[in-house]
Length: 235
Ligand SMILES: Nc1ncnc2c1ncn2[C@@H]1O[C@H](COP(=O)(O)OP(=O)(O)O)[C@@H](O)[C@H]1O
Ligand SMILES: [Mg+2]
Image 1: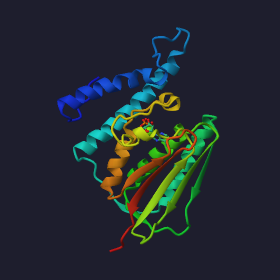
Image 2 (image 1 turned 135 degrees about the vertical axis):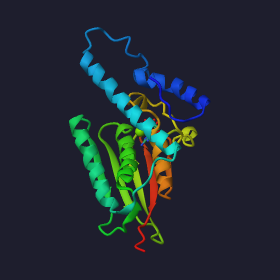
Image 3 (image 1 turned 90 degrees about the vertical axis):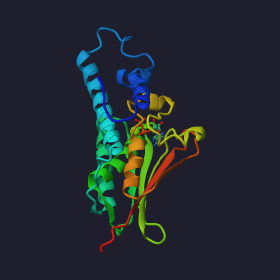
Image 4 (image 1 turned 90 degrees about the horizontal axis):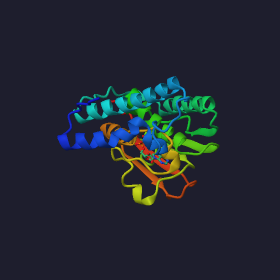
């Protein structure tokens, strides 16, 4: 398979090198698929590969569109609380389906100023952060989405807090880089491309917002991922 995404030759080559283990699944268990017994069910295997490929292709397409300036936003006044309720509902359903209990809650005032954003892209931002919190927190963990409008009220801030594996201090400058993936066993066991946060950062910045994270780096202390979006101005 060949992706023409308009990067320079050098990055393309290193991306290809980087992606291979993720595509074949070797990164997740260190053994790869070749070590499996023949009795393992083929359809399930195919399904999983299909899922991985889908995530990869969608992420790469997003990176490509962003790189070439083809992502155009259709901003409107948005209620972040409503979007957060949807995103939390989706993850709660997944938690039930996967039999992986997780406590998710929303902490937001009833009266929040509307923000100015593209609804699908804002869903993507929050969806990605809550998805990471869900994957990188052992079961029976706690995830909270808090929304508030800090002093001045020109922007709305969203914090996604979990009590999961956290991010080592040395790695924290790299989390928003393309292809960065942590080395904690829970991260290695989760299929992923390491592109999600880099895409989310680009999209937040296209909205003239900011994004950052905090973690003590101690597993169990978790992480807080925060972003802001500008308040909708009626004029
Ligand atoms: N809530 C979180 N808790 C712990 N680690 C996280 C969290 N969110 C992101 N990370 C780390 O940042 C890395 C990059 O995240 P992301 O760009 O979404 O890629 P992916 O999820 O595909 O690995 C993850 O592999 C993980 O190591
Ligand atoms: Mg992710």
